[in-house]
Image 1 (cartoon, rainbow, N blue to C red):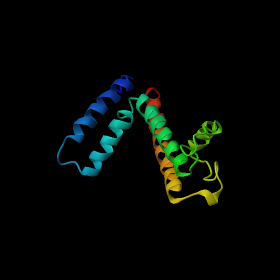
Image 2 (image 1 turned 90 degrees about the vertical axis):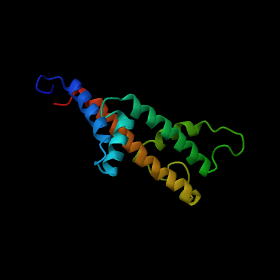
Image 3 (image 1 turned 180 degrees about the vertical axis):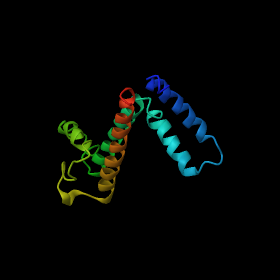
Length: 138
């Protein structure tokens, strides 16, 4: 398929072969985990919808947990609309830890959520770009 220039169809066949490879019993468990993650995150490079939706859902959940850990949400009934704008700083994987509050207001839970968000956000950005490039591969 690649020799004829049909990269998209060759990638679809590659995804099918990866799914079949995962079912082989002699494959190591770590390789099965990698194949499972790639299947569910971007369908082996075929889906831009999966990483985009996963990015949005995971970042919104983590941001809500982050705000809750800092007692900035669900504590007094008042909604601070500026927190919506800080969401975009939160999803920036290069943001400083103190983009929203001073360093003395952090706790272990808030720092762990911030770190997990950077890892998960970076992963889904990579998966999105990887799937987005499916037509540009040569």
